[in-house]
Amino acid sequence: KCGTTVSYNNSHVIYKNQMIGISSKIDYSNGITRGGELKIAFECSFNRTGATEYASWEVKGAAIVERVTGEGSLRFLLDIYEDATYANKVVNFPFQLTLNANINMQVTLDSLDPDQSLGVVRIQAKDSETEEDGNLSYDLVKEGCIVDSTFKFIETDSNLQPHSDPKSKRFIFKAFSFLDSQTPIYIHAVIKVCSLSDNSFGCTDLCTKSRRKRFVEVSSELNGEQFHIYQGPIVPSHLVEIREDCVAGQFLHEDNGTQESDCTWNDCVEGQFLDQTTGCTDCPADQWSAAANSDPTCTACPTGKGVASGAGTQESDCTWNDCVEGQFLDQTTGCTDCPADQWSAAANSDPTCTACPTGKGVASGAGTQESDCTLKEDKQGDNQNYSDAAALKVSLNFLVVLLFAVNKNI
Image 1: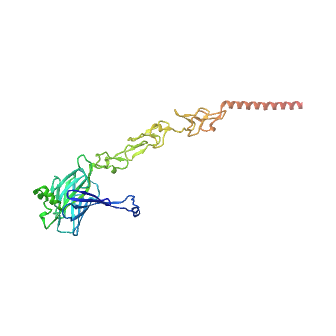
Image 2 (image 1 turned 135 degrees about the vertical axis):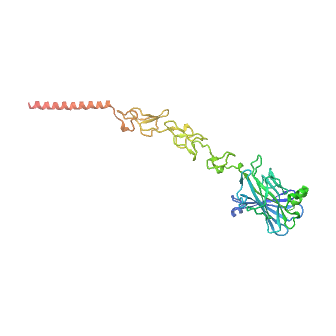
Image 3 (image 1 turned 60 degrees about the horizontal axis):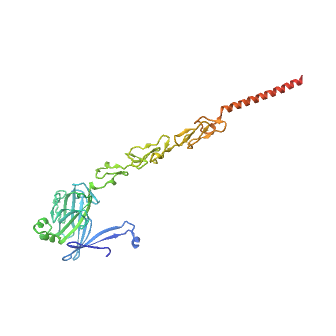
């Protein structure tokens, strides 16, 4: 019920399920979740033959075994340590190691029974968290015997004193990876609980005992009270994608990175150039660049043309700048001086200039406003002639009046 699955192996019936804790009671009552739930997977196993004495619940790094008949419980721990001092446990996973580096581990039986001891039946590396799943495996210890050349049990502590705790086993081996595979590695341990007072079926010298008996007999004896536990994942560092360790805008080519300086900048998008200190940067005004630009500069727009900073993605994005006063915009050649007798104000983008009033003019390119237009020289001459004629007429009229007065007096 409740999603429990049942599976079988040679010796046990195994029930699997998971407990889910939802942070919101309201969401739970409505039968929904919005994330943030806690999931704890567990297993319950029973021997397929013989008297049932144990049921076990297993999570990564620990297994808790409760007696079905009688009282008491056992707890098994499998831990990875940072170094050979066995002072600091590894708590962050995946745990990264370079190939051939030492892996320091300890398996522990946590119980109140002073007569119990611990034996190691199997240490196996797999590409899966479970005993049943996975495609790749490698034995370090098998049927109590060391089968890996780099594996050894640690018999002394960091002070070179004998490690005499019968409820724990420390061991060390060299890190490795599976050939042609980038999968992480999980360490699985099958352990046996023994009695110190009765060593006839004890946990010491399991390898010698297994070699004295046929395989079937050994398996039957050792499987009597075996418990499984696992830890991991362990990831060889040469397989680790460390792109996330590069600063924003940088990436790391696969298998090429050993330090942060191996991170290289991504190619820039269009409208940017690559600054080796700060990364991709918008092109300055009046410059452009195409996509995938890794150059330290952008391309300048043609003379007389411009584009906003970061907006230039191709040369056609460059448009003619507005013309200065006294010019008009020719779409072929750019800004050009206004013809004679025409003017224009600043920031002119029109294709023409404004003509001066009739009779007025200005030199080419010199007209920046209408007041710059002045009377032309021929018009100034006409005005002068008119003024002279008017003055002559006034003089003649005065002379006539004077003569008339003189004649009258005579």
